[in-house]
Structures are given as structure tokens and as C-alpha cells.
Amino acid sequence: MIALIKYKAGNIASVSNALDRLEADYFLAETPEQLDSADGVIFPGVGHAWSAMESLKENGIDEWLKKTKKPVLGICVGMQLLFESSSEGNTIGLGVIPGSLAKFDESKAKVPHMGWNTFSKKSEHPLLKGIDSSEFLYFVHSYYAPDNEFAVASCDYINPFIAVVAKDNYFGVQFHPEKSGATGAKILKNFLDFVYQN
Image 1: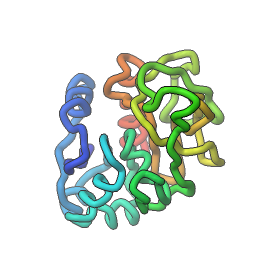
Image 2: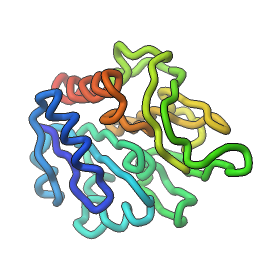
Image 3: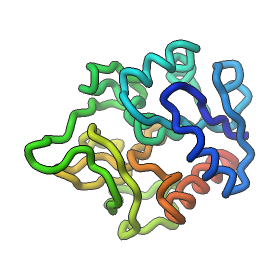
């Protein structure tokens, strides 16, 4: 069964609706003990990175996420917190993926990056099985992770940034798959398939 982390910065309703449409078996988890019973974990997030990180710390979920070997999918701010740090509030992240997030340069274009955009694949990954680079995904973010060796796909807005990242059992997507129509649903389904096939 999939655990959907419930904390103050999680956009639970929209992700829950997306999982319902996929007829996925999932439950809301608020403690490490509840997460222990999951086969895989979805870690959503909206808003401010520092506030989200503090909310994770309240129940010790941050330490659980750092140590788990279960598949974890971070969405938007959830993905950003997988990295070492963010300049948003000088946030120290979980550090399970190398890299630090920076803010888009507002002098070059409108921030946040909001709306539909495509991405380019940098490598093959189960999360993107059957997904073409020409397909559009929905983004809303002001901070970005610069491309690095763990980028599975990148996007371009003001400058290149990581759209999909993967390292060991940790996966992250900067866009909102739960708001990205059939393409987003396919990516969520790919994560579910990965969880149950490994």
C-alpha cells in the first residue's frame, strides 16, 4: 500500500483525488510508525520550503525519510526537500540527493514559473516509461534545482533546471503530476508499478 504523507505543507486533496482516479490503495501517514507499514511513499508539498521542513520535523518524518529504503516520490516542494538545501529561507533539506536550490532571476522573466511546459529526457527511467518529451506538464515554482548527474529530465525556464530527479530509492518531480492530466496520471501509475514490481 502507498503512504501519502500528511503534514502542514502537503496538498493532500489533489494528490488523493489523482490516486483515487487510478484506483490505488493508499492511506494518509502522519508518523514514522505509520510509514513503516507502507510499500512506497508519496511526499507532496506546496508553499514555503522552510515551513514544510519544520512541519516534517515535528513528527520525526524527516529522519524517517533520510533512512528509508522504500521508494519515495517527492512532488514539487516535496522534491525540493530531497536536496541538501534551498535558498528559500536558507532551508536545510533532507540531503538524500546532492544539490542546492536557487531562486529564478525575476529580472529575466515572470516568477513563479507557472503553467504548462515540456521537458527533455536525459536518461531512461521507470518513472517516465511511455512518456514523450513533447508532452506538457503543469509547473508552479519560484525555486529550482540546477541540472546535475541525478537529473532524469530537465526543463527550461529562464535557465535549465531539473524536472525529474532520481537517486537510489528517491524520485522527485518538480511539476504537479496530479494536475497534469493523462500524462501526470501515467507518471503516478509508473511510480505505483515500480513500487509493486520491486
